[in-house]
Amino acid sequence: MFLSNAFIARISLIISIIGILGMVFVSYFFEPIEITELKKEHLEQKISVNGIPSNSFIVKNVLLFYIKPFENSKKIKCVIFSPSQKQIELINSKQLIQVIGIVKEYEKELEIVVDKVITVD
Image (cartoon, rainbow, N blue to C red; front, side, top):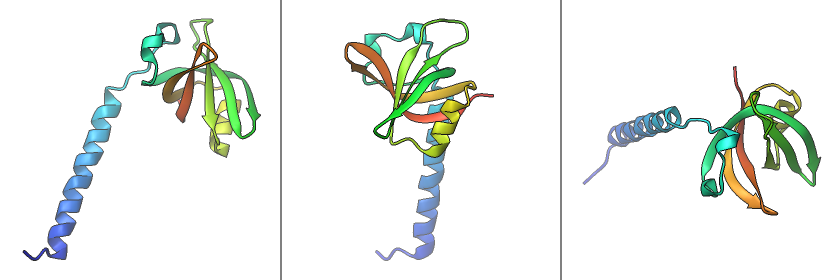
């Protein structure tokens, strides 16, 4: 069976559209979690947390900071390995952000290894 370029292009387009719709569907149902709800059951799970960053510093190309929501005094440590300049600027801006990452345990405390940082309007 001979596959024409037009046929391959159509299949690629269909697969791309399905992939984009899948990402939109998953992100729509991915709700932020409250820091007070964070427990050991969340270990190794991907979560999203909204809050204000504080106490940020960089050690050996690792950005460490805490994120704290408005309504609560509890905060959680966040870690970004090899942060981009944009991520550093967002953390240092002290504005409301959303971090998305994996919950890990380090020295008997929960922390978030951050994949993505975005501003919240």
